[in-house]
Amino acid sequence: MIRPPARPAPAGAVYFSLLGPLTAVRDGRPLPLGPRKQRLVLATLLARPNTPVPVDVLTDAVWPDDPPRTARKNLQVYVSAARALLGSDSRDGRDRVVHGCGGYRLTIDEGELDTLRFRSLARAGRAAGERGDLRTAARLLREALDLWEGPPLNDLRDSTGVAEEAERLEARCLTVYEDWAETEIELGRAAVAVDGLRDLVERHPLRERLRVAWMNSLHQSGRQAEALAVYDDYRQLLARELGLEPSPAMAALYRAMLGRGRTARPSAAGRDTAHGTALPAAPRDFTGRREELRDLLALLGSPDERVVVVSGPAGSGKSALALRAAHLLGDGFPDGRFHVQVRREDGSARTPAEVLGELGRLCGVRVPAAPAESTVPTDSAVPADATVPAVSPGAADAWQGWLALHRALIVFDDVPDEAFVRGLLPRSGPSSVVLTARGQLAGLAPVHRIALGALADGEALELLGKLIGPGRLRTDPAAALRIVRACGALPLAVGVGGMRLAVLRHLPLAEYADRLGDPSAALDELVAGDISVRLRMASGWQDLSADDRRALGRLAGPAQEGGFTLDGAMEALGCGERAAIRTVESLIDAGAVTSPAGEVTAHAALYEVPRLLCLYAREREEGRFSPG
Image (cartoon, rainbow, N blue to C red; front, side):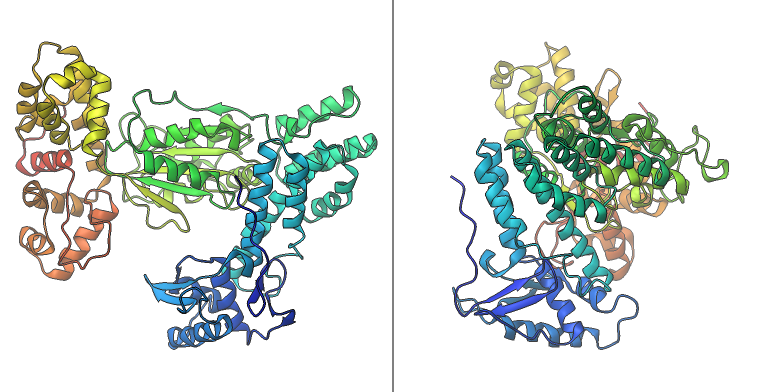
């Protein structure tokens, strides 16, 4: 059962609107919102309702270039004015704007803010369309669009921060308009959408889905010549501005219009025909990660989320999670799903120009070749601390032009650092990107992050059972548990151990658990054919700076004993508190050290290093390293 959208604000409540100029009304009367800086703060809070907004974001919205020394005090004044305007929460009497977690959170209901009501109506409309109730879908989507009064926050777009939020809101409105127009066309009521589509295409000439809907509405209204002209104009515009061609799906629709009468379904070119798919096979032994998979699917299913970072130590299953999600999201990305391996087989990073060239081949983008001086030889490694050569402006523009016009999913697998992918991420348009990386890629914003750690014991045992058989697992469950824990419960290590046991059918689980429990032999035991856990650890080790390698080698000893505190780090590193904090946080950023999920002071935190990385670091520190 779909929950009905919330109704407008009750009597006496304030109703805010962002889908047009920023306004507020109470009982039908407009309310003064104060000076411009105060309105900027209010608009930024309302654009992220019921979500903490960092103080830095608010500061950038009000003072993008040079905030005064009194910026935080001034923000407090503006927030106090917003509290007075909003009043207290009728449910518990608390302030509607509260401070915490480094920012401010504004609590507001769907019936008090047009963007929340818009989102609720749009979701209900899409759900109705998915179950085949097109008339209800068209009505609900139209109700949502009736809230759209013009370019969102058009009176405050001279602020870069507010302009970015406004563009996000406008993109959402355009998507809902496309949904509504396609639904009306499917109902045989194409004429009601023609004029609105024409106006929007004039304002957004490169948005392909709008063009497709306009073509279909004209064609089904008996205006075939005009429909064909829409395609010809678009093809010439793309060639002139970006050097691109319309998508194969749109070209197929054009040919269909040339060859027969009115087309029956706009979705043939709009939503159902994929440009292509280039994904490795779905991982057959994917196990666990239910919550993380659910979060990733939800983020990629949202029209507002473009970039998700999946991070975790080597062997934690980042690639498997990203590929699992990509295989499950076929219907959500009609222009294709693509997987690009960022590293070569030896673990060295490819150049961005190489990666962009591969993307061009996969997606059908004509990417201009980069000047010779802007690339490095294809057989050279790119060190983790090197400056990654940028792609040529023409190649970057061609790629961004394609992204702006298509809804595709791109997985960049095993990203070395932020600089590598910054120019490849979508700046606009409906495409989404998943980045897998050992480090946190903290320099990328705004992005959503999903951090992977060890599997739970039950999940790790389930994975082991898939490889050696549940019957063998039951012969000695205690030994099986010792095996997965000795593997650090990392999917890679558990998988390699399972493959080794699957071949060595005679080997008792208890004996193998004993071997893995020996710190000096564990990495030797985690080899199956050409798959070596030690080599994977070595690849991650090479990504660390020289200082981080030295520090990790010294911290591996206390880490093996169940983790270490800040005091333990100071002792192992032989340095003071501030230097130890910087070193530990650098290792956290690189994905080599894990920290508590909740907030805790640096002295109270217990830091950990994944067991197998710890063993590898000790090998390097003690000079026992062998590449096998």
